[in-house]
Image (tube, rainbow, N blue to C red):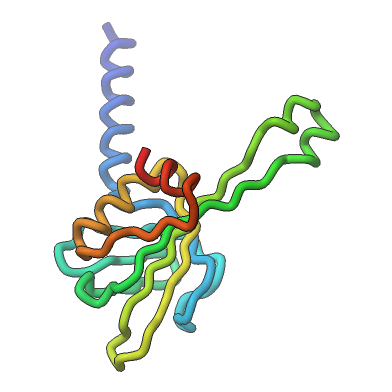
Length: 152
């Protein structure tokens, strides 16, 4: 009985921890914002009714959905040759995919700005759908593979 209670408690704690992080795990790769350090890990939150929020340890950026005028999604696919040579030839078949989201928007002073994020693969679809719904913009896919990965 004690083991069952402990198991239930651990499951509940895991669920609460998942709820606490209400954003997509991302890394800011670059863009026009000088106030955000490159290679800055954080999360994009799309739960706010008015703003897209990027939050990290170093900064918080809020962009009104109404000012977002570009959503672009693409992938970078690379083969793992080093692992294949060192570990096993079977790794030659493995592909590593990185998922990128570009958000273009008009800044407060009227100029065009952009932010490029690497998005965690488990958060891509939900983030794209939420951004389309919040902004009214359609996601532009860089190629057919990106379209398939982004729409499922």
